[in-house]
Amino acid sequence: MRASRFDIEAKADPVDAPKLEKLPDEERGKMLLPVLADRFNLKFHHETRELPIYVLVVAKGGLKMKEAKAGDTYPNGIKGPDGQSTGGMMMMTGRGKITGQGIPISNLVNMLSNQRLGRPLYDKTGLVGNYDFELHWTPDDAPPMAGGAPGSEAATDPGPSLFTALQEQLGLRLDPQKGLVDVVVIDHIELPSAN
Picture (tube, rainbow, N blue to C red):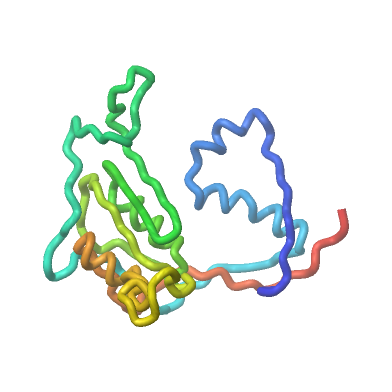
């Protein structure tokens, strides 16, 4: 099951497309379940298990992110047709980089959850505002740095891990803990039938 890959093409009714765009990713994922159940004869159930998790907390040195203020303008932020700031939020991501302007912590937690941490991530920061931040780290699967002479700092220092970058740049920390997690248990699955 972990080695086989399949392309699944599903189309939403055009009448439902506007509603679909507004749904959170989690809700869209739930809509795919009937397709998987039909095509793969999938049978599953949910269980709650105690598993390793990470909790995001404010580090001992304190928060290093700047709280966004109403009316803040950003040179590269979201602008309306008149060129003025829309007051909205902006989040850009790239390999080993997340930049946020006016972002709630929940959005940062969602982005961090997509970084293959190997366990679920929960927010325990208690932060309720919107924040500006830049986070840069070297992904675990990044190749060794090139371009530096052997023994030079550029050749030996690939940059901080995500864990170090969070603490040094944002004043946040990922604490490993155990917690209750909702898991999907697959009871039955088959190869899909031909189209």
